[in-house]
Image 1 (cartoon, rainbow over the protein chains, first blue to last red):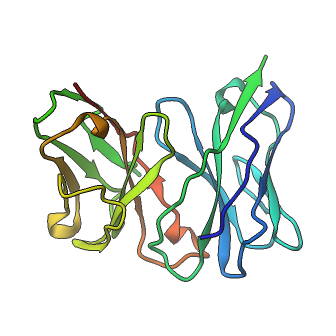
Image 2 (image 1 turned 135 degrees about the vertical axis):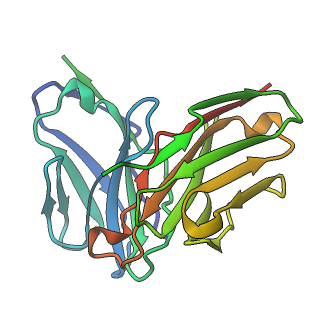
Length: 112
Length: 118
């Protein structure tokens, strides 16, 4: 699986947009970009995924660069409950059963 | 729709004892996964079931770990005998059988079982 690189930690003011970057420069054409987060003492929570088009759902937006070598997860109006570790993961399309490979993620701290 | 559930939420055992963790996937999900995070480390894959069959058990650390999914519904993960280094959080996840591109391949996680081996 392709590797991802994320900043270790980030801060964001409550109510502002949180923009979490991820570098996946070795991603191949058959790999999706997935984002999960883990709030303290809970299991990983699915946020969003995409292939090459930008995606939006009720939780977040995912912006993928045209060359697909990087992406940004956007939480439009961060709240204190969004404080968590955010994981960017690439995963092949052609096998629905592939494992998720978690890295260190980005620890997002939303501050009042 | 009920999510993935795990039991127990916490377990404290002594070294050498046996512990069995249980996971109930989302109803209708054929794929079931076990992961764990040991202290200070990243979340690591253990194994993957498709229905009752082990599809990939490449992440299982050693033969003290035994996973089963009889009948293709819930799964158990037994650690026997437990060692100190087995302490950590064990997560279960499930996904539908259909391919990626839909939400079918997305894995949904349970809350985890926190295991402490003394």
